[in-house]
Image (tube, rainbow, N blue to C red):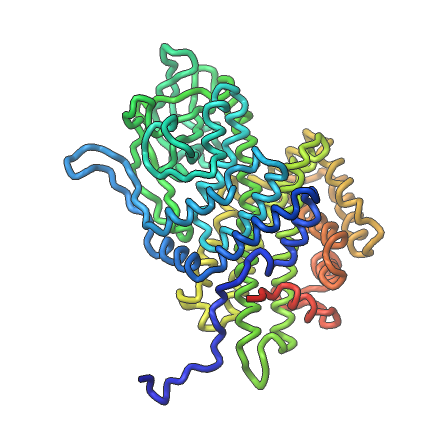
Length: 544
């Protein structure tokens, strides 16, 4: 019996038992907007089913358990044999299995696949972001493998399968397979051309023996890996199977798992190759060109992952504020808290709207859309991923001391929040990539300007921002030193143009006034008080 002094009141109920998809109006509208009408009914049902699963108490518990019980490295078995296996909590396998069965690795093989997968990725990674890594790597490996028709015929059906098979055995014996990636080394990091891993040709055409190391190897439990190594003809892309066709383990020595700030349910490792068998993918000396489409796809997933984290953080903050009372009323009704929540909601909706527009461009596949992606993806990767951490921090603060406690789930979101800004090239790498696109591919800028130009005349602050951006682009003096500023403006103008075209007037007005018009402070909660902030907050409220 509870003591009379311990009656629990004024606590928000858990945000569980709801449809994560249906409760996200910006995401629902993006799917409706971009997807072929003939596919819409099926996609809505599919995404709502995944949304209900994600929002269930059971799956939320799986996410917590996978995070609390990180993977363990088993280098040897009980008899001293080297096995190099990673042991996961059962909750991890349940999460990953559901992600695979939900189609998060099959975008390339079904109509509207990229948009449907992107929406699913935003939904599912709100349960636990760690399993997004192997899902992303597996999805992104497909375009690289397609540079070799024979490899594609062998591997793509396995990677796009809806079957999750966690056993380590020859891939030819499995109904589904996962892929990882190993590019960076100790001495080079993002400068992959400094890689020292050596690839020695073997007698069989297209096969090599690899010797060297990888400082970061993602998802080491996968069935295959795309890695970069120095062949006689220069830096080359290779496929390294985890288990060879005769059933023996390939030489894939996992030296240790990284002890990371966040993303703790997922295994990131250091590996050594010593005569490791590999198959060349693409031509010798063209490793970066071969793997670049994989990098672009994973960069989009970084944008999607950050949009997902922001959405969950904002949903938790608004949910808490809707139920919590202080100083004579609900927190959500207090003008200052409403300003904070609306500001966070703007950031979240802008991220989601941009991410889904990029996914739709992948489905379109036209030359103009490919040119648009060349500039828009690194710009979005730079900006959206950087906005994730301040959003997570402010959303946590909305819960007060409750948000600082692990049981709230907010610390897990906060630890995860910097990740997507670092993986697949940190901020400077993205900014320099945008400069390369501007300097070498004029069609990319033309496609971008055509996109933002569709909203011209609808908002004077957007028009002014476009004009100022054109002025900046015309001045190449010291452009590298101011690349971050330039890329930030490119991303903000694109977000503003999309919101002006697609979002409710209250959302577009608030975004343009603050992000483009300069009527904003340096922290969240500094929007102009004259805006309709209550409508912005209500739009972002998750209905449990």
